[in-house]
Image 1 (tube, helix red, strand yellow):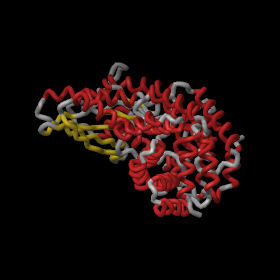
Image 2 (image 1 turned 120 degrees about the horizontal axis):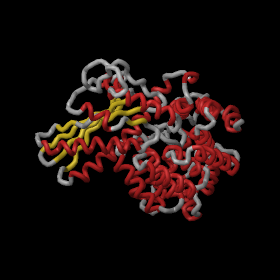
Image 3 (image 1 turned 90 degrees about the vertical axis):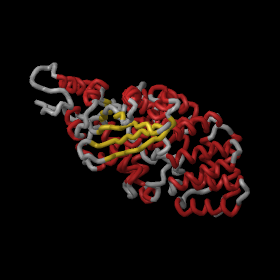
Image 4 (image 1 turned 180 degrees about the vertical axis):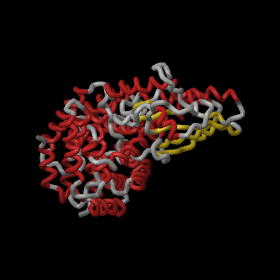
Length: 472
């Protein structure tokens, strides 16, 4: 059915050494585009908690037992954002806390991968300190976000924490200090940061949760998130094959689930930057066809559009990747991973200044993103293309710090050092590359770069610098 699976089976030994070295997202948030009809049905269940459906059901947060709780939403990660607490003596800051809560709910609602409880349900808990497990049962959600604001002299301190309702475990927590003088600008900045980082960390939690479940109990989206987790995090010879099998199973269970087809295309497209494709044009063509097939099934899903953009980007179609990613970000501007991808696509399209702006926006929105290492790498590449080797060296060092086994990080670091005239240090970077990826050759690098970069000057510049740094 899908030739890539057979190819992986024939090359398991080689791929075992690459399981943790692939040029993909450090931690990926799996798109949850399916199950919209089921979600709408569950919204009907949630509506029953207001007591209008008859019976003795009480509203949330009243401290009284429900006659029946809404079922836990399991076809998507589900989130309830409790009203942020104003811990300042200034009661005027109450509107700021409420506004921040509402904006976070709105921001999260842009992401089709999440089921977000509406404001009217969560504001029923305002002024209370409810038990998080109880909130999870009452609203039928897997995660609860809670936080507070406090005015300290002329600065605002905002804290936030994401809690898994079933276990009470803290998935993520952070505190943000900002000047209070431009309060509305601060609110916008903080909301963007929380939403972007929150989505990434929900992805981490969902990946861990999916790994604990047997595949036969999973639905299509769960199979895909388990496939992603295996693909990224398991250092075994069978990991690539297992990821493909799970994704194929998702398409068989639910052929109308667009992300399954897009992720198959994504896995295929990854053969190019991994330098393991034996026929780049043919693999690229097949990856693009799968991406188009998935998009046709869900043309307005921002997560699916984002991954389709990634797929066609690696398959050598940067301009098409830009189009897909712009569509994705126009629907959900809070996606850090697709902001990264957009910057990369702009870079490959030789729109360097615009690309740099996107990476700076990514770091401003999500300074602690789990995939920061890869973002530093692509920012370093842009800086290299612009001839700013000193800035590029700082970026590539951060890449190695955050993602030490990322092969392209060592390639680009070596090229940057060559641009600075540091020949010995550049060769040390290439020696590290040989240690981590012994099958990577100068010929394979040249072939991919010429295929990947549509601007010949960019390709020649990068190839020349890599050649200067190269040591066998």
